[in-house]
Length: 104
Image (tube, rainbow, N blue to C red; front, side, top):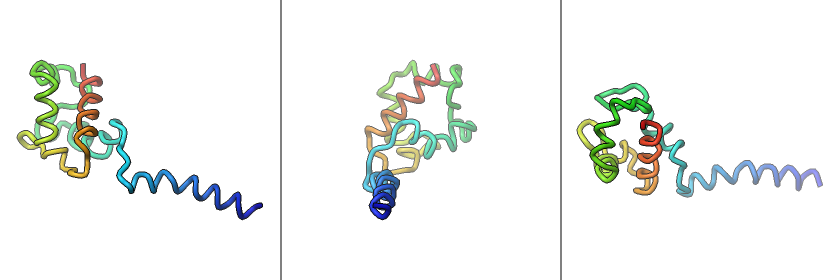
């Protein structure tokens, strides 16, 4: 019984790591923290800081499709997909939505 319980707990703890390694999509908050925050927390290379309404307003005014295109393909100093080519287009778009929502 004790061995079964230990095995079950081990399996339940290991399952999220296996799912992550198998390419399960990350939540927008996770993508932001792991990829985007490096520049968008500090404003490096002109990146608008998350939550800076004044910096984001003109970008938002250009439309969400332009923001998606910039994030997916790169723009200026920002590389395509923030430099993480393993991200899906959906993960990138959802993260853009997250950032825009936090910056309105």
